[in-house]
Image (cartoon, rainbow, N blue to C red):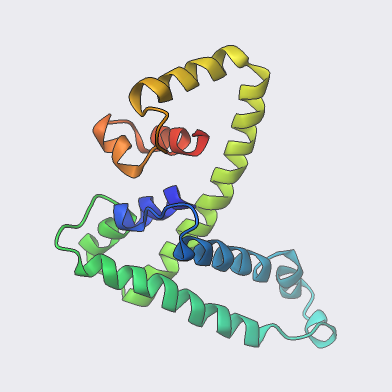
Length: 175
């Protein structure tokens, strides 16, 4: 989640483990995913279910308010920075054609989708590394030699070593 937030909002959103904002992002992403899951989507195909199942409208309104407050706060902080980094939000702002609410919505979708696919990719990567100890050893040595073992990798490591974004997300996540 931290890596995806940093890709969206730059290093200002690179939260350390245990940070309350990071936990708020996790909780919000899980809440949105649950609300937009199969149970809610099936109503679109079978409108009769709207009469049987309880309404989720109040929950949708509350999630939207929470999303706008959380990501709106990050967007405000991002805009107040003196230097904007190369990131998802910076790219959108450079185009200048979206409202803040649209940017907040896109950032929320990007972070939600990115964290789910990243989690799935990491699960497979861990399974593959466990089955290929020789590659696991190479990855460990690369982290040890380039990052060190006394700290966790950070967003800055990707810039320092000029690694592709996908690569340093994987390295940060492995460590």
